[in-house]
Image 1 (cartoon, rainbow, N blue to C red):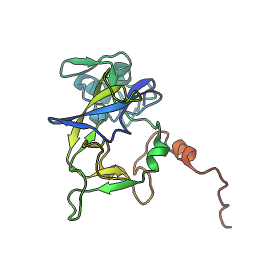
Image 2: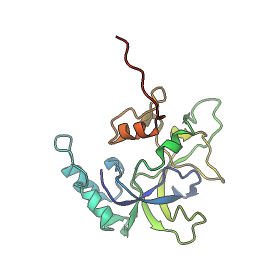
Image 3: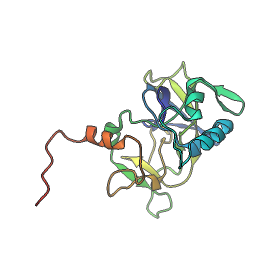
Image 4: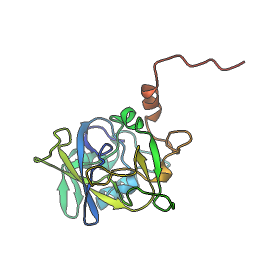
Amino acid sequence: MCTGWHALCSASPDCKMNGDKADCDCLRVNEPHIIATSEIQDLVVKRLTLAKCTEEYPCDIDQAPVCKAIKDGQYEVDNVKYNWVSTYSYRGWCSLLEYKPIACDQYTSDYTGDLYWAICDAAPCTENPNSSNLDKPLSCQCRVKNTPFVGFGSCTGVNGGIMSSFPLWAWDFQRNTYPFAMPGYEYVQGACATLKSDPLPSR
């Protein structure tokens, strides 16, 4: 977990395919965020982070080398240093859940959605001065996958693009939650819940 500025691509349903990558217009936000260490594309920073943040000695907030690299603009991919990196945070999560996550599995016989989706975890990003959406001033170069994914209300991107998402195994559709521990998610669920009393347990 890190704090500070980062790119957020959770609400990017119109990423444009560009070779083996997708260009996604993303939000610019300043809040606590989560980095999937397995997705870090700066190989030196990834090695340092995996060495310091272990199961036995997990890193606390902002202790991971990747946090410092992102903050200092030292995140390097293919010999280019980037001031912006796409990571995960809960900005707008309640509104995203209103679209109801659905399973998008292109290997089922009656599937009609997109075959590809963009994975933006730890993707490098640049300022986009020509963005048509002032709320999304960053352009992130996300990797493209052709595996089952989670759709938000649809399995098809908009405006001819593909959506930024996450793999199908990373969502429990029965319980409407992640199947693994996500820092802070219990608070997000509480914030998203309707303001009312819960029933007392039966005695």
